[in-house]
Amino acid sequence: HRDSARAGRRTTLPPAVEWLPGDAMRREDVHRAAANAEVIVHAANPPGYRHWRSRAVPMLANTIDAARRTGARILFPGNVYNFGPDAWPLVSEDSPQNPVSRKGAVRVEMETLLATAADRGVRTLILRAGDFFGPHAPASWFETVMVRPGRPVRSITWPGEREAGHAFAYLPDMAEAAARLLEVDEARLARFETVNFGGHWCAPGIAFAHALARAGGQPGARVKPLPWALMRLAALFAPTVREALEMRYLWREPVQLDNAKLVSLIGEEPHTPLDEALRRTLAGLGCLTPQAAGPVGDAAEPAA
Image (cartoon, rainbow, N blue to C red; front, side, top):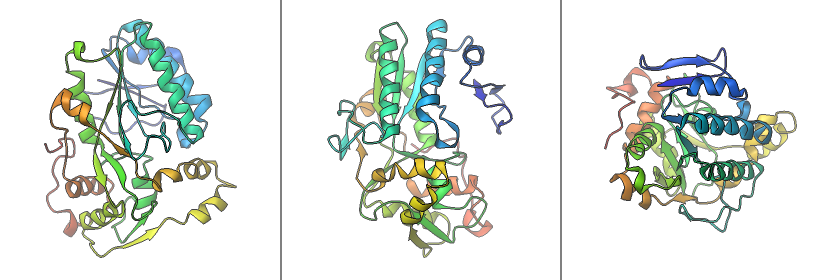
């Protein structure tokens, strides 16, 4: 296994992973990282949640070129940015993709590139999921908004409407589902294949915040709304906040993923119980007091 990251941003990795510094915007770096690979996981996003059109598309084009040269399959983590009201509230793999945001339009463009590359022999598997969380998941809503890493859970900031359902993906479960999909007989998959990962569907969405409070050992913790009005003011000066503000609509509307296709391909979807998944995530972020932590299982091994 290889991990190619921006220079100077090395993270703690398992011993089996070979770390290669590089820049996904440089084609030669991507070719070097992908040498002899059977699967290329393209999980690169523009840093700081900015410059999506000018960076996300060229980075993916480099991955497509590397896959074309090596014959590797591309594994692409998809999200729900691609969809608008005509696809809600239950999204299938065949739902229309009419996004209502700039980043959604970029995501559609990226998946169109992958579909076009399939005509030239490049195989792609898209595993689509909701908002992700996990013990070592940087730049998620979980760690940037809901809790404060390194601190006990005293209060929780909830970005969404209290009653609107919301889909979450626990990354170890999603990774296990991806690994199982890659073992499926290729004859059962299209050259360009999209599969939905159901994850944790919380309806009402505020149930996720209450579960988070329980997992943090503070079942009575205050759940406060994200001050979106202040974010609009901050967006005038902070581009990253402006980019996040564009996605507010996904916290107002229920967008659930139908995972029937995934189940037909691999059987039961990997599914760690929500409270346990949240406890493992909080432990990884250093948010559990010794009393709240208790015995925490291996976060790399999701429960069936």
